[in-house]
Image 1 (spheres, rainbow, N blue to C red):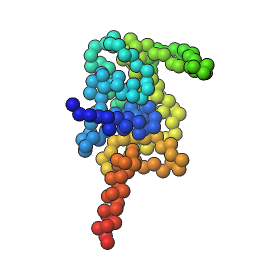
Image 2: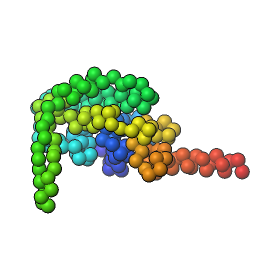
Image 3: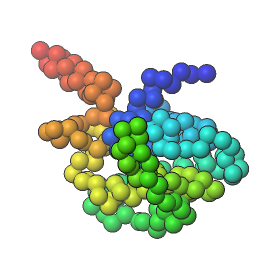
Length: 194
C-alpha cells in the first residue's frame, strides 16, 4: 500500500474548504489522480479537514457516498470555473444538494466558557452527510472574491487555490511543487542562453 502521508498536505493548499474539495482530483507523479477511491477515503478526507463526520457505519449502501461525493465535486468544479470565467454558473444541482441536507444550530461551550454556534447535520442521506462541503461551495460562489480564486500556473496542474497572501501574487498551488518546477525551468532556460 502506498504511503500518502506526504500527499495529504495537498489537501490544504486551496486555503478554502470548497477549493480543497475540488483539489481532491490532482496530478500525482504526472498522472491525473482521484484521491477519493472509497467511502473510507471520503470520510478520512473530511476528518483531515475537520469536517464533522460520523465514525460509525453509514445508513446507505457501500459506494454511494463516493459516487455522490464525486458528483458534488464535478458540480463544484463546473460552478467555480464558470464563476471564474465570468459566466453564470448553473446552481440547480448544488441547490438540490443543499435542499436535501437538513441541519440545525447547536450552542456549545469550551473550557473557558466561550460560547460557539455549531451546525449539526443529519446523516441519514448522502446529501446531509456532505452538507458542510456543499455549503462551503455555496459560500464560495456567493461570497468569494473571484479575483483571488486562481488556477495554478504549473504546467498541467489542475489545482485551484484562494490567494490569501498579503500581496495577492500567489501563482502556484505550492511553492515547493509547481513553483519550484517553474523556477528550475526558468533557470535552465536562462542558463541555456548563456
